[in-house]
Length: 128
Image (cartoon, rainbow, N blue to C red; front, side, top):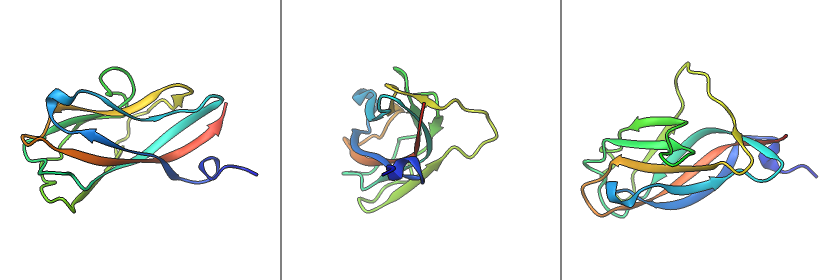
């Protein structure tokens, strides 16, 4: 039977990340062996504290997590029940993620407060 992740946009991974600049990159999702993946959106939700001051976050693979979306401003996420949906939303060609690629988040100018948040990565996988 086919995996739902091969047939529909679905939750690929969910993880908790540190949201201050000093926290560095957090890997949220690793593309499985024999697969490629397309990320369609990331939901940032339920921070442990306000993300005010967090004006630049990068999402993607590589050491700087800067291959999918950069300069994401999350400073308006100030309540612990808030969420923010990040989509690619541009007309720029993007490469798919290969097996073993580690998709994550990196605070470039992170939150002022010592905050963590849950990030849900949505998209789909397909066979190589």
